[in-house]
Image 1 (tube, rainbow, N blue to C red):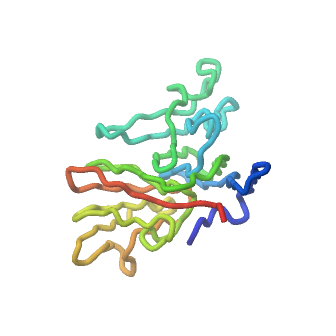
Image 2: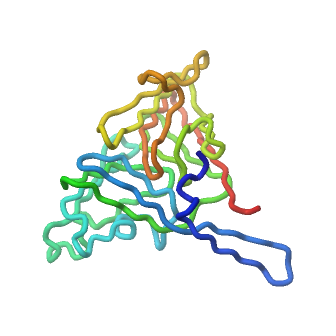
Length: 230
């Protein structure tokens, strides 16, 4: 499924330089990410303005995200977190730790929804373009596609996840059933799933993240290519 989030939700801004044949097209718009009660692994595959911090993506000045907690995995092997404040008079921007965690394209984080009903996150920004490199470091990475797409990560013509090495493992998170699906890779068999009927790792919806375990001692570069230019 190619850029499933773009069709129907993203507008286009065209720039035509005077007296030249240079044509530039930037895809801008929004995506909606549904988070169910409990833990969800989310991503923001857009470049937002002025940045991709919680303060920009999920401004909590109005207490919309009261008691929500964000957990982001660090390469050091631990989490950093921030929570939506209950007392806005104490935390004027609405986030206990300042709202500085950044959901940059290609990364992911846990979103804990403390409510009994779904929440909808709306992210507004520009779609990344060109040759896009996501560097996956040895050990566990909370990763996502850099562009707003979903489906089979291997056969999708944009994601083209082909940088894997022996014993690499992907764990996708089911935000509905709150369970993992595991996929491991070997040169002889390719990707093998713990779920009957599945082979390649699949991201069900745009704006979802997953765990990527780099089994080796060196980083791997996952390269995606996308352009809206004709």
